[in-house]
Image 1 (tube, rainbow, N blue to C red):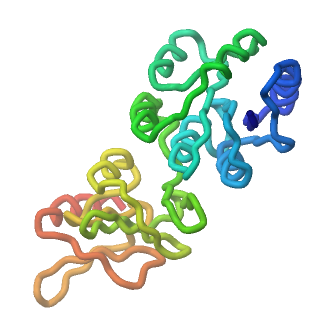
Image 2 (cartoon, rainbow, N blue to C red):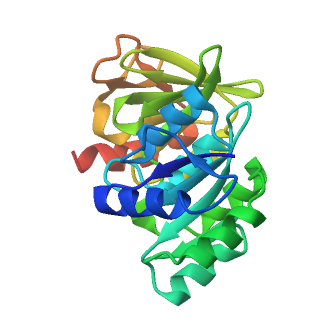
Length: 245
């Protein structure tokens, strides 16, 4: 089975590669990943059977990366490698395919690899609910013809719901996702605000609120030409919000 090693520490990656070299039937990929984004790209490119994933990494951590990886056409099993204490590990053990406490012991690695199984999307959604606040998603993932496309939250202007899909409007274009608007609002309430039953806008992008001759309100976003309609229900909240700018 092909294994992708993901860790931001070169020495940890080298040690894991050494341990795998002593096990039969498990072959590490020639290229390792140093963070979650690299892991996603390498999974798309090489389709490993198992990913050994550190949890705390700069840029994108292991939990978020595993959530994105689980949406691939052929998702690998993910085994988390962590320096968390025992109580933190227990918080993840129900949903995780496997976990290893650093420094990893060879017998534990052998057992985890033998027990590895496919993570499904529902499991990862449940796992994400256990994530601490500082590990919330930094990217939105969408399935495209190219595979999984990732859009940084900082690049998103607004979300617009239409029928059963949500369109993500970002600085480089737009993509469709199937995340419900209600769930996006709950997850990113500190970064996006609802201005209409079908629209969430980035708080950082709000420039001003205007009113036309018919009494309808609109939000002007930085980098967006077309203003976003504000429903009558959300006008009072937006007026208060504008006072804080």
